[in-house]
Length: 234
Figure 1 (spheres, rainbow, N blue to C red):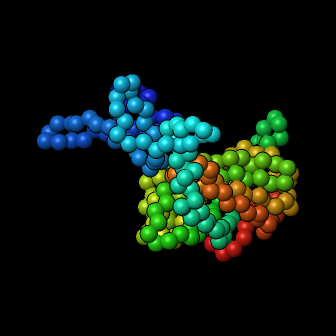
Figure 2: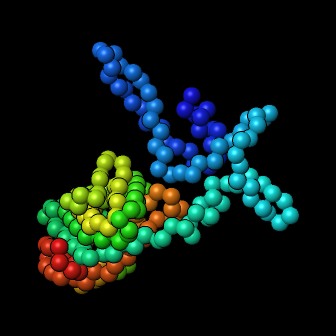
Figure 3: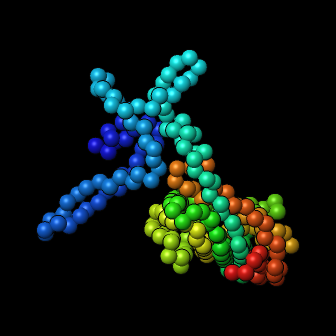
């Protein structure tokens, strides 16, 4: 049934989520459809009448509008979201002794990051950021440190609501991205004295391209077992 419903929608369809709801001692199975990526364009069955349609002129002809064309109409009406990086910090600790390097010379290290982002928008505007469409890329000189999708969103701002799938922001707000994990990377000596190039992509609903925030973090501490990079005050 879900696939049949999705086949009626052109390009991007609402995401279904299965829900089991207890009611009067029984469980009711249902489907909840996320509608945060509107507008959706629905196909009409042969022989069925169309009640409403948005025509789109191409050369001398007229066709039914597509989703991307609708978004092109709406985009100029929506002010571009302003996101500013107020502060950022990256820390790398050697997690195991040097003799435990891999055959390729890589080390296992603990990496930690924290970034403070200010979202500037009017009080009445609601922005929804998809956590699974957001990512962080870190690079040290010629060494690609990796791309990470578990960014670790959090905020104490009352205008921010965070769930397992989205970050909802109404009005101007401060959000934090913070996480720590053990990863495999080239020897710490290979990134000694380099700057950290950071690119944060935020996948916002109703925007075809992600919001991109870039920054260069200078080296702060360059020790044999601990290295840090940062800008601003956290």
